[in-house]
Each structure stands twice: as C-alpha cells, then as structure tokens.
Amino acid sequence: MKKHTVTPIIVASALAALAAFGQAPAWAQDAKDAAAQKYAAPLKKIFEYQAMFAPIDPALAQIYPVAVVENKTFYVFEPVPAEKAYRLALTAPDTFNVPTGVRAAMPLAFWGNRMACVVTPEVFGQPEGYVFIFHEFVHCAQWYGVEQKLKEGLSIYQQALKNRDYMWELQYPFPYSDPAFVESYRALIEAWQKDDTEAAAALRAKLYAALSPADWEYLTWQEWKEGVARNLENRMREVVGLPENVGGGNQPYDRVAFYIGGDQLIRFLKRAEKDPLGDLEALYKAIKSKTYR
Image (cartoon, rainbow, N blue to C red):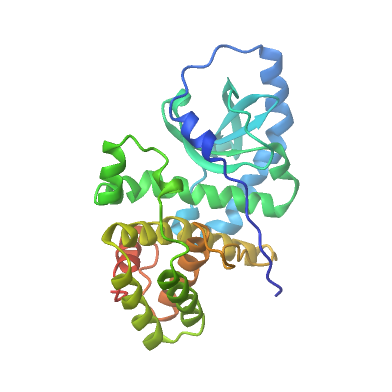
C-alpha cells in the first residue's frame, strides 16, 4: 500500500481562545433547525464508522460530541446512542475566525468544558474525514480517561500551570534542531521500523541522556498523546482502504515528528509483545521508560 503524508490543520489560537470563551447568546430557531437538518445524515454516518472502528481498540468504543464551525458559528451536536444519531445541543458565535480545515479536540468553556471534536463542514465529504474525526475522539478518550491524572505527574505541566501557560503542549521550546536529537530520533524511528531491538534500546538510552528531564517529559508525553491517536488513525485507515498517514517524518523536525515517532514506537512495542493492549496508562509508562518496561 502506498504511503503519503496527511496533516490536518490544528489551530493553536483557537485552542487558547476557547479556554476563555464565555456564555453564548441565544440564536434564531430557524438557523438551528436548518443546521440540525443539514448535518443529520453526515453525523449519523459516524455511527456506521464506529461499527467498523470499535473492534480495533477500546479507545474507539465511544463517540463524542462534534462541533461544526460554519458561518461564524459553532454548531455543537451531542450523540444520542440509542437512536444512532446526533442532536443539536447549542450554538455559539465563532469569534476566533476558525479557518476551513480545523480538526481538533478541545474542552468547550461555553459548554461546561465538555470535550468535543471541532471540525469544519468539508470533513464529512470523504472517508478520510471520518477517520480524522475518530482520531480526535481518541483524544477525547484520553481526556476522559487517564490524561489528567498523568499530567499531574509532569513537572512541565506543573510549571505551565504556575506560568499560566495554557499553550505548553503546542509551544514547548523543545530542541528540535539539536543535532543530538535529530540524529538519534531519525535513527530510532528506523530501528523501530526494522525491529532492531538492540539498536533501539541503545539509541533510546542515548536520547534520554542527551535531553533534559523536562525535554524527555515533553517528548514522551507527545509520543503517548499524539502517537496513540496516529497509531489508531493508521489502523482505521487500513480498515477503510486508505494509505497511511506518515506526516512528521521529514526534517526539519517539529512537534509532528512525535506523531510518527509515537506511532512507530507503539508498533514496535506491539510486535515485541510489550504493548499493554487497551491500557492507556500502562502504555504511557512503557513509552516514558527508556528501557520500554
């Protein structure tokens, strides 16, 4: 199967702004009715894809709210599993100019900080769009599962809270261009892909020694958070006959390198029978350990 690179747009400014979003005013009922009718069928298809994806991993067993951003408005839909449908829960103005192509999972402050997958309408036009929706659902599963517990053990998270740095996951100053990181990480991905256990262990230890404790925390956090989502995304792509997403593999490296790195590490652990299937917390501990144990 041919591989290609696919990278959805994630808008950092929208993530920051939504954290401070206040209560939305009421909107005309006819606009609500039109949106509910327009998106009823596309949203219902999410349940069809869930039937295909749920057997892959427990993180795909549940579906979550979807916020469609259109015409300067957030249309927030919540699932009604008994009816295998979504209902329009509320609307709110888009004061952030969210661009076409946004794919993100975030808590909506104007909806009691409930987590939702935020997208723009073209996502429903093809199977790949639904795969991206479920990629974001994985982040919802992490959020409602062990993410908050794991974050509390991160020194970089505690420092970010003190500094009121709510964008730390996107903007942490990781040394992406440091030759020690670039060389080791490129070689690591190759070692994981080749199942070269000895080389992978040596390179992982070398990388651990080269990074500060905070940098190691950030690297392994992103390998877990984004690596899990990318890994399951690629498994879903296989189910629906789409090529793999290998975005992040090219230099110069940035945060997306940890998407492919985490994906390849999880595959390596799985083949070595060191992947704690379905246990996100145990998987994080395996990723964070430089010895894969």
